[in-house]
Length: 255
Image (cartoon, rainbow, N blue to C red; front, side, top):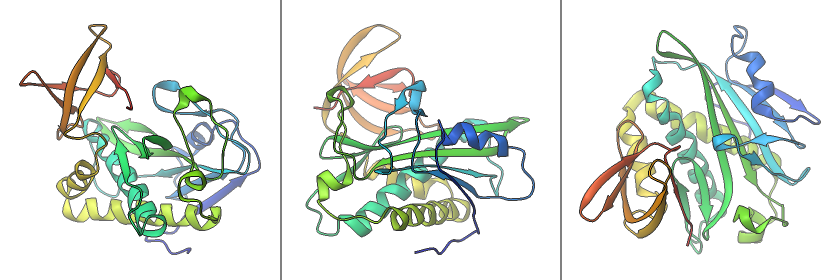
């Protein structure tokens, strides 16, 4: 599958420390839009909050997509890209690898992919801005496909471990790019509500009592995820009150 809504300019690297770091050289590129940097050997991938994304050579997907918005997107709305790429990966895996619905795929706020309470993918969004408007967006994607060894603290797994399928890395790579473009096109045509509703529908631990650590107050609370706001904040209900958190303000624990 190599169909796209917009043509891509593909750059394949044998080895790189971080595809997102490499992608930054194309922020002010005017020759191409939809540049994709792909490597089978990323040595120092970076996830949310500057956490390292650990991956084994030739066993996973690690790539970055660089593109310029086709409609005005303000800085305060950058979270929408989290929704778009999270939805795209969720739809790709649901359609091609989870047709019997034996395992449930979830999106852990703000943008991790969870199956069987294990993290199998993560996303890092970076952007450049001009006058409070997004100029260029870099979407970094890491997806565990064939890897089997994980440190316990990562709470991770892979598609092979969960679905026991023989997956074609090339095919999965192109499918995700297509679904990302398709989801982004939906957003440009139908607006934020459509992509946000899908995201909320598959929000991990939604409407279930969970334990959260609040960095600002340095303590734990018991609460229930209810939704996300139109600014991308996580809405948690605790003791019949609603609280709102940005992704660097809270941590919650997978049961």
